[in-house]
Image 1 (cartoon, rainbow, N blue to C red):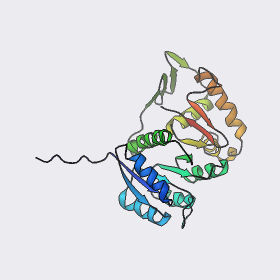
Image 2: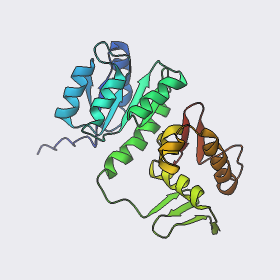
Image 3: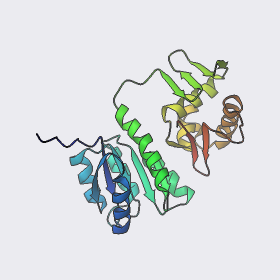
Image 4: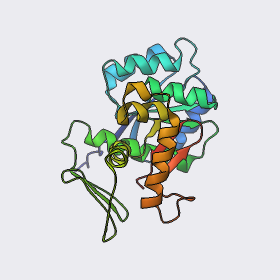
Length: 235
């Protein structure tokens, strides 16, 4: 009796024009349970995204036909699939532009394989819960955020937060693992009129760290992405 071949649990679309990088990622991703589809141009990638319905997209910005930022914007017109940008463009402005265009994460080449796999795991969790009802309780280590009752606890201790602090924390945990740019956070928490007022954000992140982190100078939850924004680390 022939044993059926198990179906890979994760479908990944790689949009990358460099053959060496595709070969490296093909071999590296063979160690995880996934089906990899490859595209070498933006046009091929957009077509593959619509026909293969991937769970995650790994996207290079420097494509030969369509810039990766435009590919991201076109994808966001019709899909919420997690997009992880893999790019040699390492300037803060490039990262912010990609994230504001709709990317979920950004890794600068060269990157470590363990880091890429960690980002894929986070994106996979997002993909698995897409369309499902949002969980009413968020838990990371000893931090618990009860969204239904608006209660935050750290271990056995309830943490008192101001309305703005709570709204900022909830925005970050709802996008846990994803880099949120300064502008994205300011718009969601304070509104569009405050999109350039980064000092508000820095002050309130400092308040949250003083209440949630054992050592605010070495945070384990509220991580800074220098020049870009903040990330809530959930693992």
